Length: 355
Image (tube, rainbow, N blue to C red; front, side):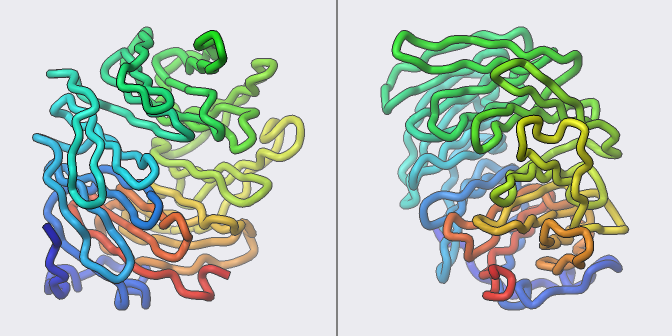
């Protein structure tokens, strides 16, 4: 089914004081969909979005989004696998959904939620409670790994030979080889959630419940803490060629340098996209550019260069509703923004924004 491209309501015009409505908002598609946006991911020619009412939508340029009623409950996690969507829900199901709406049930864990999903380079993984289930190279049977607590985050490195799963007390990294999987544990006291590998696979970094990042250098277990965040870190993204790890959790995007043999150890971050009103809840990279986008609790989205002397450019004005998901299309031309009440923006970035 396709969503009607209805004009904006009178209610949406009433904004909180902050950043004004932008040209991208005026030219883009805006919808009020009535259910919280719970996650989004970029695929080949579209962006996949999950909602709290169990629907999954495919946003493509120059057409209305396609809607699929997928889960009997909320969509809890979203990833892309080539052109398909991979979604997990509180109905205990892991689904593969094609852009034309064909649903395939990959796994069903009954009353146990599917909390996290990840896919890259032929590897698909999901977590349900303490277990991580892994499908490799298109095989229908999964390998299952057990952990000490509920898994808080999953990540796969570039190349698809490393899998990270966070839990209480740290992160477990498994390396795929000819003789199976080799396990390494990286420990740090506390609750660990979202996780990411550096683009070169040298580091693994987690976001903690304790409002800090913790990272490890895989080859020698050298580790580091990035603490002092005023809010929980809900999102991070790798930006630029250096690269920098941009994070939410403050009133600007905090971007840590990962070049050199010691990465961010002993170094200060670059802080950009400052919003004096509220904290960032989502960050996203502009592919191939040293630019970061930050979405905030007040609904604003700002684009900034990795240069503290330059002012950010508003992409979306302050709506008063928290940004819960934000994704740039694979070709870098379009942006999706979704919030906690189901308001979405889908629009084309201008040539100036992309330069």
